[in-house]
Image (cartoon, rainbow, N blue to C red; front, side, top):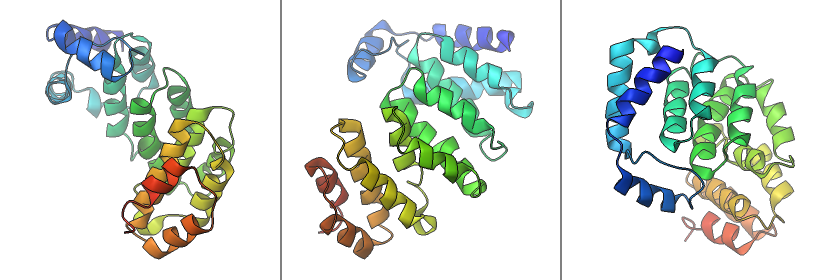
Length: 222
């Protein structure tokens, strides 16, 4: 895997932009350094990388993700998420352990939200007898990012949403003062309201929620 890391680093370094990096770092509240490679260009470079290396055709290897996660610049974590997404339909339940590591290390909304829907949400949909039980633990975890992930992991489920589980998680976190939890609750309700507006309206009316959660969750309810 080290040779692939070196090849990707070489490719990314060729397109480093200090000017872009400053703006990107400010946007992320200066939590992480950046190379300054914006998403469209990064997507092109990653596509070129996979074409040249054929890595996506090889067996999934967690080491590639972990090595990228150790690198300081945020673009490498984004590249790790891209690699993970390529294998999302082939991942086994034990991949949730890796996802948990990534959620709780170098945590911020950009990587956590990507992990919440894919792979965590995808794994929970494919393995309904095991993964959702782990989500029940995450929903009450001491780690705020795991709680956010549990609330958001059904974001793309639409008609397949486990409404009872969604509302339970929200109820367990409704009194949180954390901005990212309040925002996640509102986001989850807003998305589900596109599928079942009457249910969400009733839930909001009968549940004590933070003003931010209520406002965000009601956005499509008129």
